[in-house]
Amino acid sequence: MKQFIDKFKITEGRNFSLKEFDTAYTAEYIKEDADKILEELIAKTATIQNELYADKQYSLLIIFQAMDAAGKDSAIQHTMSGLNPQGCQVFSFKQPNSEEYTHDFLWRHYKALPERGRIGIHNRSHYENVLITKVHPELVLQENIPGINDVKKLDDDFWDQRYQSIRSFEKHLYHNGTVIIKFFLHVSKEEQKERFIKRIDDPEKNWKFSASDVKEREFWNGYMQAYEKAIKETATPENPWYIIPADKKWFTRIAISEIILHTIETLKLKYPVLPKDERHKLQEVKAALEHE
Image 1: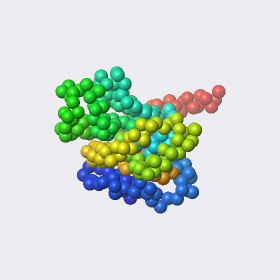
Image 2: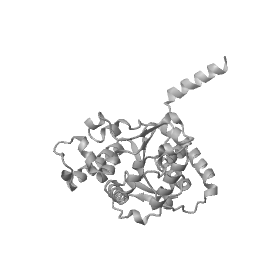
Image 3: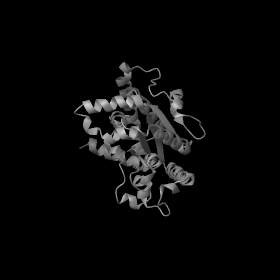
Image 4: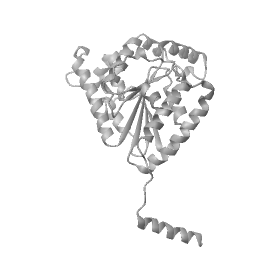
């Protein structure tokens, strides 16, 4: 499994191009086995989730970033099913509202962090501030940042500062017990087109489709450049990225579940051990109950 994980893992200093990654890659898995494999992975993760909740030293923040129709929603649904909902929380981030625009770009994401013992899932995240804003820099002007009143002022120094803010934010979280897993679901432009067409044709899915989604396809190359740059600038040994092939949803879910399980296993979680006097009291209570 380590080789499988290392293939997708991007950490500091790894030079890569998104074009090198096969969006239809499925390793040695076959679709007919996918449901059973995923079920087993989720069962193992659910067991360790209980230890995470009881141990209360760590929290897990899982970030999903992708182009439209890459399968973020279904990946969250399928990989998180079977886990204890009391220990999970999901946030989907849209365009900032008026209150959020009066704060720095990390504020609303900090508010949504999971507490120790819980798993937080962010469907889109603080990375939108170096992705969509990189492709549509005019959006930055709505943040009302001092001295930034023209897109011409969004130079390399501005973006370098923003990447640095993200690295510092994530480093702070890591050193305070939040383990971050960052997934980029890498779908091909051709597969996205097919999924858009299916959404239009399916009455149960066409509500998810917007004409603006097609409009964004015109900026595909710009988004790929923005993703590649953001991943390179913010991948660290403590907080790596994983570029997950997303053309085959069944494999995407297996890959995500494998990485989540592997990450939690490395934490060496354990159930708390009660002090001797507390264990003695429990035995007294047990004896009392048995003699009722």
